[in-house]
Length: 463
Image (cartoon, rainbow, N blue to C red; front, side):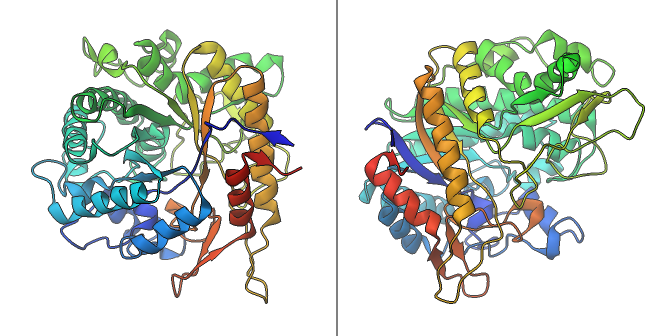
């Protein structure tokens, strides 16, 4: 039986736009995801996050579920347009009150609040002014961070500046499959830089306002890139530079990788990077958040057949992989989740060990890991999601293997607490360990929730 340290932090996670609903209540302003989901044809089934899981009105019920699960931490995100509707100016008091009640409710249940400042819901007013490709957005983000630090900094355990800036930059501004649905590769690279800069400025702001004991973090969806053969080393390098080192370089080492700049020279001259930006982006972190779902397999494209693009990030009008025209993204062998992602936990072990070796001494946290499956409610009302239990067991085992090899992994957050709005997939993909009935909003524990509660309580994986 696999055992975790007593200090290991167990949690679960959600994001504001995916669960809160109440999209136009109590002074909340519109976000780019409101605009995106209200645009016909962009979200499966015409779904929107208008009501989501109604978490905004069912806060106490959901806090009680967390308490019953026994988790030591809850990762949630703050909706920027709920607390600062236009992305600048004064705080919206009713919106801030919601998060204050959320944090206090967690603390009253002995659950550590882990707050993500940005989980993709940019205020629409800032996008209208240029969005993340515009430098001022990074400054506005730092001011927002300062406001949240002033308001909640005495109670939040861990601050996560950004969630998956890869998605914000490349899926939002290059491929257009996420909000704000732009397909501008040069703008996407500028967005990547200003996300990195915004992260660093936000950490600086939080250091001056949050409690001294509060931990600072960022969450990256690092791609564990593998080549089909040894001949594909350059394809691996290109994809790794764009997906991983574009963020790890400035955030952890204070510089963009030279090969990334060279690879993308035909797209941009990187003149948006000003003196001091890379140093500002490189702020000391207490823990690095890692989101992992599956590895990425690439091959050098020789032009002899149609290029494969099975990267798992939806087919859009353009590719998110800027300057990777000679890189194929190869469909991997199953089994697969409902997202079409292959299940391969060995990639998580290898990714954690890579981070351990490349950045020794930096603690790591699994801030998202989970799977979507076509869950069925049986006649007795039970959801027997054995495949999700198996997925979680495999990946938690992979974490222990990385820890045994030296990786300093401090905790694990299952994605997600409940079925929710899965971005451009709408409500068709269910990631939750708690089922949400779309008609009644009733919450039902799946077998995976009961299994996870046992793991949390014992610190052991059942054999």
